[in-house]
Image (cartoon, rainbow, N blue to C red; front, side, top):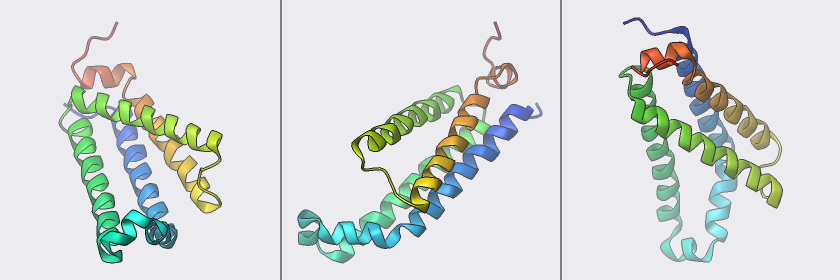
Length: 141
């Protein structure tokens, strides 16, 4: 079965959001390392442990994102469709909560966070279009 346009758009927006997130992580690297060195618990574990954990977290997040992308856009998995949807909802609520608390990113980090959130929102929206439901083998009522 040929992938419908909604799934192709999902794929582009989802992977675009992942890429924007990676760029944001790279641009905020120094600030992240500084936060780690200022944290007393992380400081006790050593700077290299903290940086290794940061790198590991980014790589694990990338691996999970690529796993979810593949099984949603290529393997037609309804389960991963719902994981992506729930993760998006949690991320959107977390972003709103950080804005309300005044702890949201500033400058280019804020712009990139909003861009990634919008791309992810468009991607999730594509998963619920009628042509996508057919792709996933769901009933179109």
